[in-house]
Image (cartoon, rainbow, N blue to C red; front, side, top):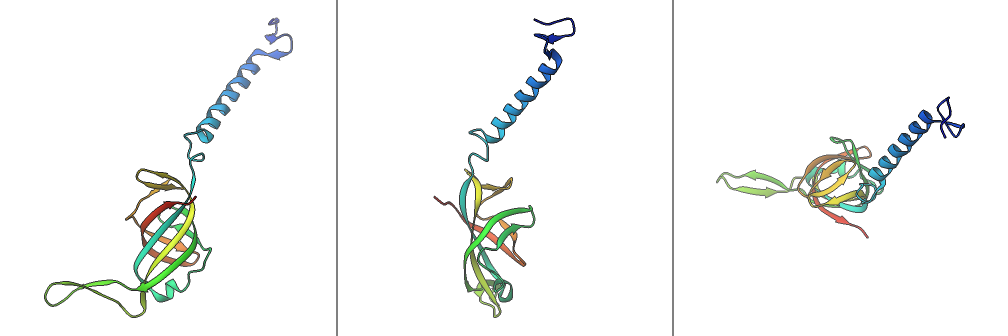
Length: 160
């Protein structure tokens, strides 16, 4: 079976065969780990993130375009693409002379609700996109092409 030169059936070196078997086992393990039923690739779903900004300059929001890439600058993660947005009155809060907090709308500013669609793994604490967990209430800076807004996540849903 093994000859004097260490070859199996006189054809294959036993050391080479062991190396090949180890490489195949490693490839099978990594394939199962990254593509198996518990992998993030297997559990990725199409998600819709709703983002809210209480106050941003009108000139910044006017730069938004449908289909713009939404990029979280702090975590270097592409969230998806901007599919829609709505603007409303800005919401500033100040304290009046009586010490009470009141809400004001400022000229030249608006509030914005933005909808971004992308791919992520939904879990019990939010959605993981690009290795970063996002949850409702989380604040972040997001670029939409050359426009940067300071937003909070106000909703996460899976799209069928």
